[in-house]
Length: 240
Ligand SMILES: Nc1ncnc2c1ncn2[C@@H]1O[C@H](COP(=O)(O)OP(=O)(O)OP(=O)(O)O)[C@@H](O)[C@H]1O
Ligand SMILES: [Mg+2]
Image (cartoon, rainbow, N blue to C red; front, side, top):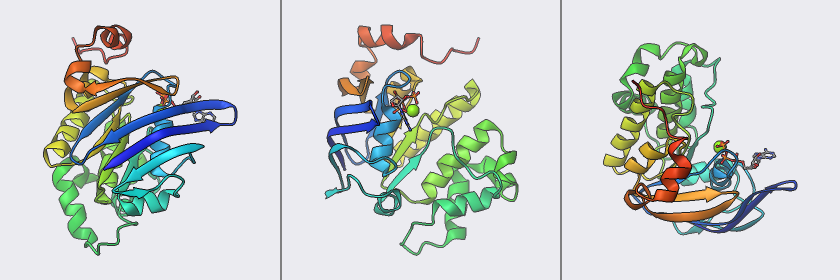
C-alpha cells in the first residue's frame, strides 16, 4: 500500500532522512523505532505531505505522492496523528472530531461516524461538549487518535501515541492499536516504547541518524541482542 524509496529530507543543513526505503502492506502494523532525533517524525511528515522530501519516491495505493500537500495526502486516505496531539483546545471535543472528517468525500453522515468512533472511545462521550483543552493527557491522545479515525483513513501514521502518558494510559493506547489492527487497519507506528511496539507490529524498521539500519519481522527484532541492548534503557519502566 505504501512504498518509500530512497527518501531524503533536510532542514537547511540538517540531513534528517538520508535514503530511506520502507514498505507498509495493507493490513500491516509496521513499527519505526529509533532514538530522539533519528528522523522518525520527518519520515511520517514527508509521507503526510507536511514536509517536502528533497528526493525519493513515495507511492501510496499505486500513485506517486511525494511532494503532495497535506490536504491531498489526507484526501487520498493518509491520516497523520502527530506527536504532541495537536488537538484544538478552544474547540469542543465534538468539533475536534468533526475536523478529522473534513477531507472526506464519501458523504458519510457525521453524526453516525461520531457514534461509530465513540464506540471505540467510550470515555470521550461524556466530554463531547467540553473544550479540547479540558482533557487530560491520556484523553487528549485518545481524541487525537479518534480524530484521525474520523477521516476513515486507508493508512494511519501514528507518531509516538504514548508519549508522556502514564503507564495505564500507555496500555490503553496500545490496546486500542491492537483493536484497530484486529479490525484490519494499516498503521505505520513510531514509538519509543520499543518492547510494546514490537509486540504489536508485524514488521519493524530501526532508524539511526536518518538511515534504516535494521528491518524485519517484529518478532525477530524483539529477540535481536543488539536492539535489546540499545533500547532496553529506552523502554517504558514497568510499574512496580
Ligand atoms: N523543523 C525542523 N527544523 C530544523 N531541524 C529539524 C526540524 N525538525 C526536525 N529537525 C531535525 O531533524 C532531525 C530528525 O528529527 P525528527 O523529528 O525527524 O526525529 P525523531 O526521530 O522524530 O525524534 P524524536 O524521537 O525526538 O521525536 C533532528 O536532528 C532534528 O533536530
Ligand atoms: Mg519525532
